[in-house]
Amino acid sequence: MNELKNKVRSIYEQFDASHDFQHIKRVYQNALAILHTEPKADADVVKMAVLLHDVSDKKYTDSKEQEEQLINELKISEAKKQHIRDCIAQVSFNGGNELEATSIEAKIVRDADRLDAIGAIGIARTFAYGGAKGRKLYDDTEEARTTMSEEDYRSKNTSSVTHFYEKLLLLKDLMTTDKGKQMANERHQFMVCFLEQLQNERDGKA
Image 1 (cartoon, one colour):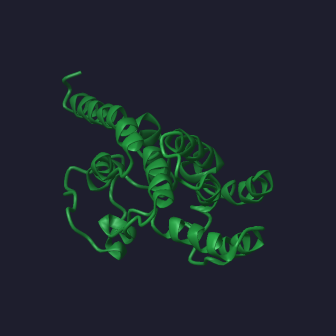
Image 2: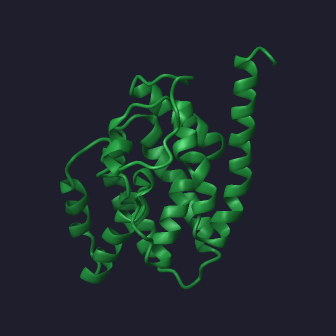
């Protein structure tokens, strides 16, 4: 596992602060917390899928070459390699067009990743990514979309605050494990409070 960590670290260090190796380490910690409550899950599959889940993130690359190379180098069965591929494919939100998480391992990886998209760290990551992409902090002329294709979701540079309404505030109710749901509640409420405070400051009420 340490060898894989070292290999992926160099890849994630090329990404902005919202998807760097620190993000991977936090998702890994979230996954371990959930694994403690899911004894039937294959912990090795979960850990490897977490380490690899953003290597081919569509926000940064159009190729799965590095991901496939790293998976093929793993000294595990072909069945486990495919399981890892499936877990990775089932993580992304894709504008609400995500694939169904078909295994407990995929559910754990998905919840662990989404926990890092909400709460205090989720707020920080949202504005870090927005800054890296030149997005506005907020845009009062913009309406949050309730339905969209994956292409629409990825192609439109909405403001960072709009992103909360199009994705982040939805994640609490999309958690799939009991532990994930429990961990999401406090983080969700923190985001709600943040957005209320932000609006108050913008309105001159705070």
